[in-house]
Length: 164
Image (cartoon, rainbow, N blue to C red; front, side):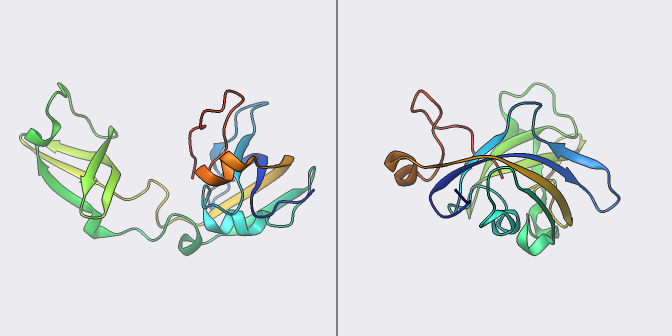
């Protein structure tokens, strides 16, 4: 079986930056499973895995256009501390779900200066070229419900966390 539209693909991966430093990797013995062809992983990686078979190793260097996009200065904004009601302490590196004109997004606190908080709506990997080494662990046909919902379900029929 090969990785194609509407198949559930389980992969072990190592993600490195252009300097060869490991940025992320799948947990030991726990592959990442996703529904192929539904935009659940970065487009460039999904394209590189297309057609791969179980047991195959795939290497892909993915530019920002096919990953998390280019870094956008307009996604860095200063907001009032009041926007974080119910949060006692704010510190750089903290992430929050926020509403924007384009819908919900994750923002990361960059700095806190009194009542002014600088947040960044860029993905942490925006602007970076990504170097993936992937081992395709397993491929199966998706269930009708998985295809309808657009993501993999775990053994209890509930949706797994979506990645990418």
